[in-house]
Image 1 (cartoon, rainbow, N blue to C red):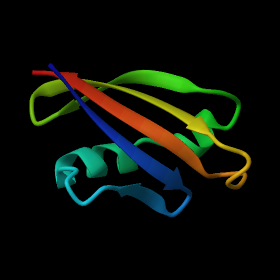
Image 2 (cartoon, helix red, strand yellow):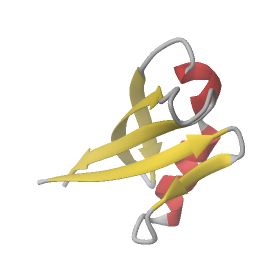
Image 3 (cartoon, rainbow, N blue to C red):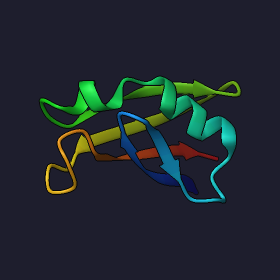
Length: 76
């Protein structure tokens, strides 16, 4: 069963639901999401606590020039 976390990001940081583990939010915050996703959607892999997660992010221009949505996904 996959685990999925959805977060909002901007140049100031990443904002997740209260149930999102701190390690997951910090891992997303270390990625340069606003600049990397500015030209278009991005995806990749990130290791968190020895587990590999896939992520995807995209800027949502209606929310602001540097504001977007990121999704973090892992299989159990």
